[in-house]
Length: 401
Ligand code: GLA
Image (cartoon, rainbow, N blue to C red; front, side, top):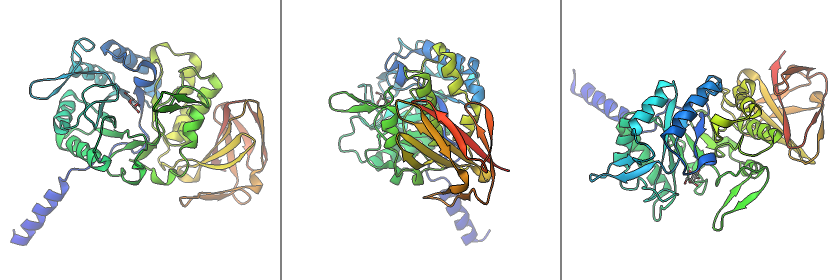
């Protein structure tokens, strides 16, 4: 081999091994379940095993949910060499055994840490231990890391998240990296090559349209979080998603609100991370979370978020371009009374404000499917007439005739 060919080869091998994010992951929005919204710090191995069992038995796994994620408060102390350990009382069998259990169900395992010295609940954070922690997670078989932003004084977010990304990559086990700095530093502008998802807002709260005041911070109802997504859709796509936070479906909203929440997160191409008690959910909640036609809209391979096409009198029309020239449309009724929809397709066209997707219904007819009521309307040559109950949605899939 000539010298310069050898040099080129070395360079290529070298370049190929530079740390990066695991690029093949999250080609569609991640789906799973996380402990935080319902259980906060009350986590232990029985809860996680029970949730994994329930994810299979409820049909959620079959519907596409994959990750079982322990949020804050699983931690014990670091050992004398600085390696993190699980809390021995809550996780007496150890984290590795728990991960094995979750894997044995055909599911993946997610864990939580923080870029700072301590997590938001005051547990040990990863600051100064990034490579050690990444090695530990790889040893345990972890597949997903949510990485929070508490206690990060003087840390630069791009640097801190890049350090952990690199540590995960060097540890060698593919890990989906979920950035959680609440949108404070505009992660949509810099996180595309660092993480697979990034939180766009502060924490969600299980109400329709409220602000929950915690003193020096607030958490937000479903509509508040939805409204904070404005302007962000152009930053998302396969492998890199805006994350409007985990779902509150089944945590005290009405059945209509649960449906609307789930529909809007699906329209936003958001990660579908359930946050309810999987072992004790109502049949209505289970049906909402496992609605396959709605999930297919979330998981559509084109990976576009919906945009707000129109809004009038509490009734919003959201439009999501889908693969193969198909479209999803959701009429969201934010109001406290029912609203009538009267939508004349022939006088409307959809023209994506950020990407190159367009349809003029006067020249291109589509079939219209109501996915929540599992029935077909006629087609777009007929105006759509329907009523949307308060705090509810009507979601349609449009397919070329
Ligand atoms: C922050 C995050 C939440 C949750 C808690 C855990 O508030 O935004 O999603 O992880 O920390 O303490």
